[in-house]
Length: 149
Image 1 (tube, one colour):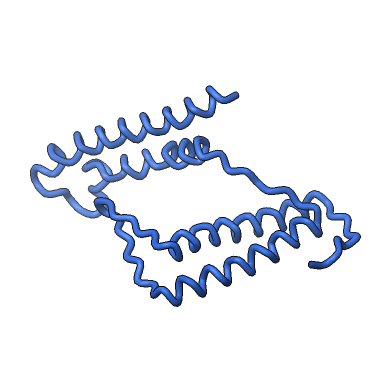
Image 2 (tube, rainbow, N blue to C red):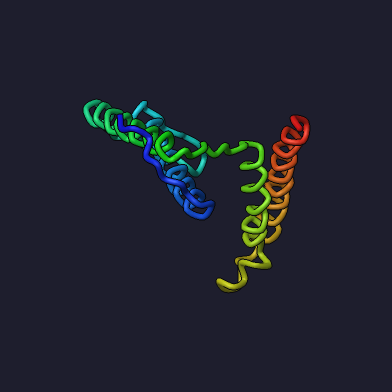
């Protein structure tokens, strides 16, 4: 589209611009999945994609135009793509979430009042198993990362 401008970015500007455009591009990727019909149906998390065919087509057209502009900005400012390592992403998310699960145990639920009889005996062992699986997933994600380097 446009010729590459003669702009020399400093590291702080480059980093700020790259991060913002990376987040935008990531949003575009998720929106594109929805425009292509994505719906997740799990246990507690359910997506309902009510986008009409016309809206999906319009979304894909807008995304395409935005990506053209993102490409122009990337090339024009000499920016680099940021690569997100999925193993590290999983490891990070699962490393932090065990604490959230831990706060579901009866000991922590007392902040909402005394838990009902039998809740601790039922819930706490289940949470321990979830935490164990969570740590297994975290370790598997980290294991893939270490094998590649």
